[in-house]
Length: 206
Image (tube, rainbow, N blue to C red; front, side):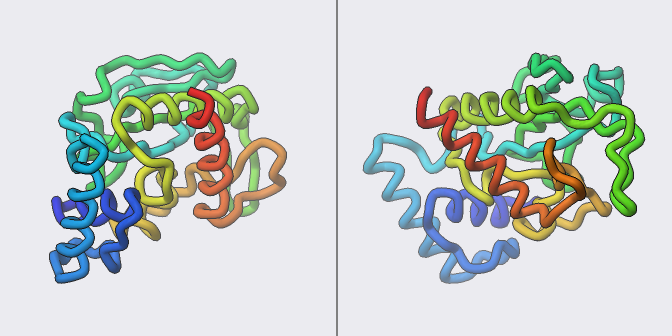
């Protein structure tokens, strides 16, 4: 994910539409960037957090309800079946969780969906639990508060949303397109909106 695309996503998250998230530094992108900088400055804030963290990407591990060695190497944080959150590394550490879109993003993964199948849909041996969804919302809210990340489609999103929202091609990823209580996967942005609603509620009480 090149610097211009990341800047466009940040502008969109802050409420300044840069045009298509396409990595092209055109006049709309430059205008949005200038406006976003001014708006942040008025609040006494930089355009983005000094760490460079601007997004949270949600995943599932396609494993059991506990992290394995590969999970611990791939994600910044992992949510067990009971909702417990484990951080094997600092959020600023490099992790390869999203193809060509790792920079500036924290990989927050639910340990679940071993043996799951998208079509025909099968939950598999380790379906997502309600406790994990609640923990995902709480941890996302905490990260948003810490790193000045708005809860938005461009800054808090699932792996399945990365391609349609940020324009970075992924490899047929469908995490997270189904949640407890659903009978089958749904549109990733629709499901993402449900998670964002939960995260926004958690953020409002921090």
